[in-house]
Amino acid sequence: MTLQPERISARDNPLLQRIRKLGADPGAYRKLGGVWLEGDHLVGAALARGQGLSELLMSESAWNTRLDWRGWTERVRRVLVLPDALFKTLSTLESPASIGAVLPLPESAAIAPGAFTVALDRLQDAGNVGSILRSAAAFGVRQVLALKGSAALWSPKVLRAGMGAHFALNLVEGLQPDDLAALTVPLLATSSHAGLVLGQGALPHPCAWVLGHEGQGVDEALMARCTHTVSIPQPGGEESLNVAAAAAICLFASRLRQ
Image (cartoon, rainbow, N blue to C red; front, side):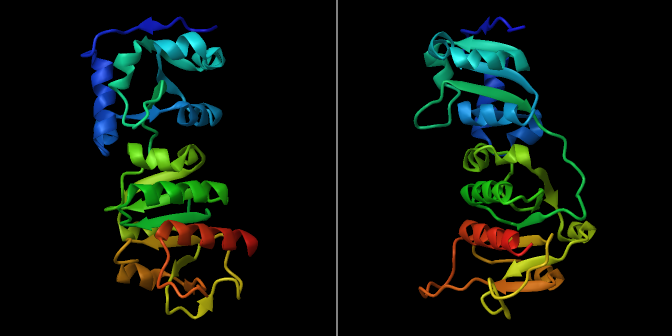
């Protein structure tokens, strides 16, 4: 049965205040226990993966014109319709969306020891982290483990860059390097001085690719845990690749070498 929408017109409504905090503070989801999904792509991706949304919010114009969205109301707990101007006060985008949803923060799962994994070692750029999550989901990675110091995985910028990848992955954050000892798969890292050149030898699969800080790379002690170091050939002569680009290349190579 399709839920009838509730109408909200007060700017200081407690739910709207909570959503603004979720949008403004990258780490607010940890304190408030929810995630703000802005835009029809993220909301649709969450529903497609069976995520339970607590509130679905639409602008008045969206509710009146986009009838195809009304089927989503059967799969959420509450539906709220806001005047267009009020909905814009929730947006973190240059071109405000007309639909959004609140997702209760998923419980952090345990590390899956034998899963095809990406481990993030203090990656701080939210765009890089989101892009890596997107590549990970595309190439069949099962889980992403973020060490303490990495960008908040459920922050608005990471969510936007991930384009729905979050809902296909087991995500665990706030880890210490020693926590990776729970993995039973070999750890791999890229290095400009490695003996194995990507594409010229077999890669273990499943494995865990360790991706390091944008400027400092993988921590020295963590690099010592890696059983393989791999270099990416760059015939064009560039010194290095963006970490998100390097991740996509490495994950694709892992799939080819299964």
